Image 1 (tube, rainbow over the protein chains, first blue to last red):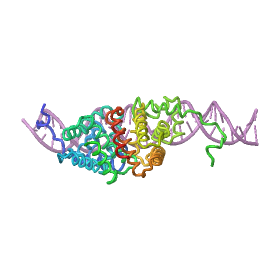
Image 2: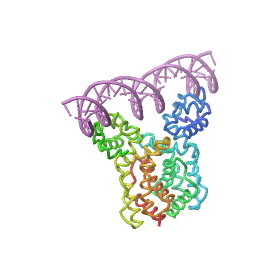
Image 3: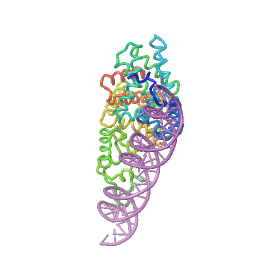
Image 4: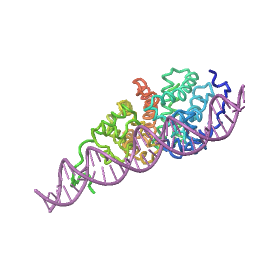
Length: 184
Length: 184
DNA sequence: CAATTACGCTACCGGAAGTAGCGTAATTTG
DNA sequence: CAAATTACGCTACTTCCGGTAGCGTAATTG
């Protein structure tokens, strides 16, 4: 056990996750989710394709890890519910608007519909943490928070998918107003 | 000209669109969007794959046509705004919950992020009609109606994508309440 | 030194989207 | 009836992508 603390023998892993993630988002931004092939990502990251598969079991897993890294921890900045929700929504909108993030999200998202294993990864690694944090901070039921996440992320991603562009400022504000209206 | 009314010469097209659409949704429901290959759809419909490509230029186009057929015209049943919106949202939720429809929608949706041509098809053939009808019935600006569609469809599809299951009754009711709260 | 593990590389497999070309079936027109 | 025309089924093919296997080599520990 203690896989993380044991130095173990052998050549250590090179520090290239950051390069790979950056190359992944760049590729998705430039060629779209389907066009961002593992070969292209590998070349863009200056890494062998086999190295990618040594670290992530599939393209979906790589993209999900990339998204987890891109989003990072949820910004729980306040104890005021309105302020907390406002910040969180603006944060989500900004993240989705980052180059490649929205397309990557939508892509892995759809693959997940067909792929239960990927859905599991997506659910536990990406959604669950935010679900817990928000549930705790808002003191709401899991069902309510799940609903809120569906509304917020669903709206942002739908706009991204239909128009190809992230949601504009004033629409984000409308989204905030709507959600605040429900969660008070 | 008059392509639709001219009987023209030659063998007429067989009446198999309905069979193809049904086979498409069945395949998507059973194998997921990615797993519903053109070969499988063709076999399921009892049709040659080349025939599919004679009628639709790509898999995305076929699925979109299938969705257009599955959704049909928007149900504008009332002049009362609340009743109209309520009916429309319940109708959308029910459609997304139909076998294969949600997965097909999510799939073509994500392909569209990477594929501008498909996004054009999706936008003009699927979204635009509803946009117009709702804009007319509600007397709202295009921006507002577009936002409403993003919220409604985005929420329903996000739930479908994350959980693999359509949204439950009471969550749909919450969605209705939320949207009504904004559009009054 | 040996042992161990990671990396790069090349080559490959399986499968799916989409295409080409042929023979044939079902029509309209003369 | 015959010719022209268009659609269908079928087989075969190309291209591309996700994912795997195996080898030589580099970096680390003991």
